[in-house]
Every structure is written in C-alpha cells, then in structure tokens.
Length: 593
Image (cartoon, rainbow, N blue to C red; front, side, top):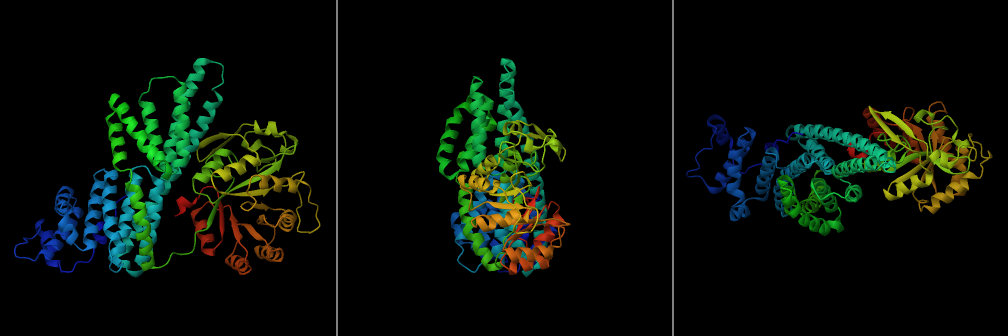
C-alpha cells in the first residue's frame, strides 16, 4: 500500500501562497519570513512541510513539524485544521520510516484536535478524516492487522466516494488509491485464510499422531503441534479475531508445558501473542498488561532485544487503538452527515458449504467462513442409516476421497470416521464429516446464521410443488434438534423440494424458509409467482435472476438469495439488482468492502 498524498488533504490557507510556493520550487528553500505577520509565516511553513514531503526530504520535514508540535502554546493558537494536518503529516512520515506503531500516537493527537473542532465540518475537515483513516489502515496493514485495515479502508473509501462527487478534480486520485489499497488488503486476507487452513490441516494430523504409542514420535508430534497452533493464533490475531487467537495460543502453551522444557523463546513468543490477543478483548486488557509485565524479565534473561522492545511498545501503546476507535466513531459519523448519508446496506453474505478454506461442509470450512465475516453459513444435510442428520452435499463421499457407500446406508460412526480430502486453489485440505448438531454448535459459537439445505433423503422428500405430496417424519426430528440448540428464531431452511419448505412454512411458522430454484427448474418469474402465492422467500441461481424478479419479490415483501457467486463481475451484477443475500465460496464481507 502506498500512502495518500497528504498535500491533497492540506486545508485551504487564508493567505495566497502562490509566490512563496514558486520560490520553494525554484530554490528548494523556504522564502525569508523577515517582516511578515506570524499567520503568514505559519502558512508558509505548512506549505514548506508539504513541499519537503512531496520531494522526499523527510528529515527536514520532520524538523519543521517538530517546531510546531513540541510548542504547546503555538499549537493551541493554530486553527484546528492546521494542527490536525501537522499531526497527519507526522503520522505519514512515521509510517514511511517504518514506525507504524509510533504513528498511532500522531493519529490519536490528530483525532483529538478534530474532535474539538467546533466549526463547520467542511470539505477540508472531511479530507483530513479520510486521509487519517487511510493512513491508519496503512499502519495496521504494516503491523499485520488486516482486520482493522479493512474496516478503516472501508470508511476512507465511503468518505472519498462522497467527496469525489462534490469535487472530482481534488479527490478522484485519492479514491482510486483507496480502491487499489482495498484490493491489496483483500489479497492479504485471502492469503491469510489459505495459510490458516493449511495449518489447521497440519494440526489435525499432529493431533492424530499424539497417541501413536511411540514416545519419541509423540513428543515430535506435540512439538510440531505447538508450532502450528501458534501459527494459527498469529493468523487469527492478524485477522482481528482476538477471542479465537486466545484459544489457539492457550492450547499451544498447554502442549508446550507438557513437553517439560525450560521456559525459552518459544514460550516467550507464544505468551506475547496471547497478551496481544487478550488486548483485543475489552474485559481482558488488565490481564494482558499483567502478562506483558511478567514477561519482561524472561525476555531480558533470554537477551531477546526485539521481544523486549515489542513488550515495551505494547505497554506504551496499550490504550491508543481504543482511544483512536472511540474518537473515530464520533468524527466519522459527523463526517458522513456532511458528505451524505450512507448507501443501502450491503448484501448479507452466506458461506457456501462453509467456505473455500477447508474441505466443503467440514468444521474447518465452517469456522474459516465465520472468521472471514460471513453473516450465515450454508450446509447440506442427509440422514444416516441409524437416523442421524449429517452434513454432506453428495449422497456419498467418493468425490471427497471417501467411500462410494451411500450415506443412507452408513452408520453415524462410520460417517464421522471417514477421512475426507480436497484440493482447492493449489492447497490440499483434510477433514472429517460432522453432524448437523455440530454444525449448529459452530454457528452458535461464532454468532452466524445457520442456513440448512435439506437434500432428498429416505425420511424427508417431496420434489414437486403439489400441496399433498408426502412429507415423512424426518421434519419434526429436524425442527426438534434446531430448537434444542436454541436456533429456531435464527435458522434458515432451504430446499429444492417445494413440498418440504411449504410443509415447514405452514406447520412451523417461526422457522424462516427459502425455496431453491436452479437453471432448468422453470423461469425465474414462475418461481416469483409461486413464492408470492405461498408467501415464501426465494433462493435462486445467480445466472437466471433478473432485476424484474428482485423488484417483484420486494414489492410483495419477500427476500431474494442468490447462489453461488464467486466472480467479482457476478457479485457486482447481483448487488446492483438489490438482492438481499449472496451465497458464495470465496467472496466474504471483509474482502468485498
């Protein structure tokens, strides 16, 4: 990511600096301030700072900035937007010099100045806010925190889109840079998810080797497991998921302790990671600070200079991100009021069979979809020979490396012990099937909506639109399981069998249902008419959905889900139609913003 040119965010000056700027361009120095009023000298120095930064004379720019920021009385006398821009300039220099963590202090000071700005929230005010947001995203990206970077870029882009409509000449270049930066963060997040899935597969393998019976092999597997769990914690932390990062680091430290080794560098790095994860949790920040202080003697004993510095930086900056987010909340809201209201709410994203990061319909795919920001997770269910609802798209596991035996002829134990593998985007994933109950537990733990597709089975079937088609006793068992998990008011049940969804809709009105429609099942408008007749939402393949169909559903108070949308151009097309939900393997909210 490249920093935004802060000259565009420089507030309009009260005095005409054209001649002074021309002299700077010619001589490379600031014109003599002799005999000039103080306010003119101040504005000339601001122009000179901009000139120095533009020409990569960062050390000289830093010296002029410090003349201001270390003089409290002078800073208080400056117009707020001038003072905020000076802190913004300092922030940009710190990021450019490889000090993103130190730049957070400059950002906090800029936001404090802006929060006290009582005047009209002008274009200049919003330009500084947008550039601050972008620079915060750049700093967090450099620090490996793509979760925060993504959110800050989203806000910066929202502001710049609206500013560009008002002043295209000034802001169009900045908007383009924000869009390009978002693409870079998306690539980073996608890479993180792929790497996470790789480590999850490795952890599962090492877990299976812990009971090998060979003491040396068990110890090696446990040591490897500590490493992979630590890596999973690192990635979770980078993605902004502090709660799950805590789980991975804690588990890694538990196995590390079982190895019985003297506390060393691995313990130190895992514990620092745990402290950083705890800092993400509001009610655990005191514990994080206490842990960091206890780690300092260990880091010093190990002569781990980098870790000592990291601990001290964390302790010094422990409140900065909190203060920044609090200040941004009020300032960003005010900025949006000035430049226009937010656009329509983004479509809700449903992870198709979980996500692309793991074997489809397995725990890893579901958990990674939730971590990628999905609103809902979709699964397919079938019924085993002994009556258990299990998750699978096909009626057997042959496509995923399992047996050809139909799931309907397998016991629950046989299904759950089946080893599955799949190769996606060059990465080989491994996993095992899970029950519907386990899937619902994941949805509850990660606070996502379970979207359950009923496949044709021996106990649930009706593949026509006729009202009197038989629906067998699997439905009450299914609804009872959902109710036991406390998800009756959240679950969405979908199926290509209209008779099934209609039966559920009539007999279990608290359950949300959607009828599935594919290419070749009839025209989309025929399905719209059926949905209107039965007062039911539609889940339709994206290739046949039309704006006319979406508008007709919305006019009837019904919603539209589309599947399976993985290409950017398809996403933009259905988004423009105003669909309510988008089911996807790979394009999740944090990446699409």
